[in-house]
Length: 162
Image 1 (cartoon, rainbow, N blue to C red):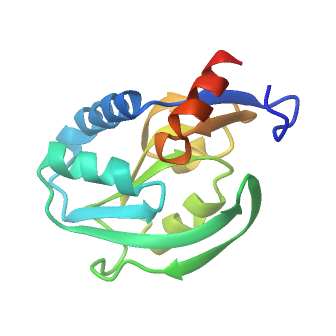
Image 2 (tube, one colour):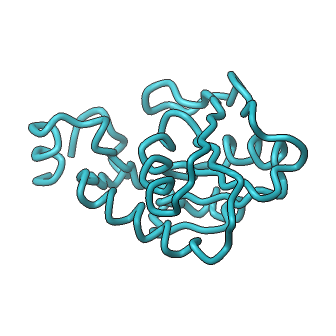
């Protein structure tokens, strides 16, 4: 176990291939819930999944919402840094995409802004799961997901072999 994690944390490294497969599965799961006006990606984690969903669901319009709630691996209070420009009203017909819902702090802010939007994430932890409409994989609250954009190949292999 890496020294910078609490002893209870479980490491869950995700490869690019796994992430792509899970994002496609998410697209298939929500494909009959459209049509969509567009996607709102929660940056930065939602950017890659949003790109895959946009392609799979043939959505051209992608906007972003920027909410900062992490300092490295310590969560702090969430701040709204940028609202989606294209979205008007309650978000009906829009698809919100993120990689992960964790504590639900970020999700709660986005939900308040766009209560009628469909919220989709690839991964969900129990604390945030009630705020999401569709997800693919649930992991325990003490699991730390290592996304491929956070890892270099050597670090990935070290975590994989821990």
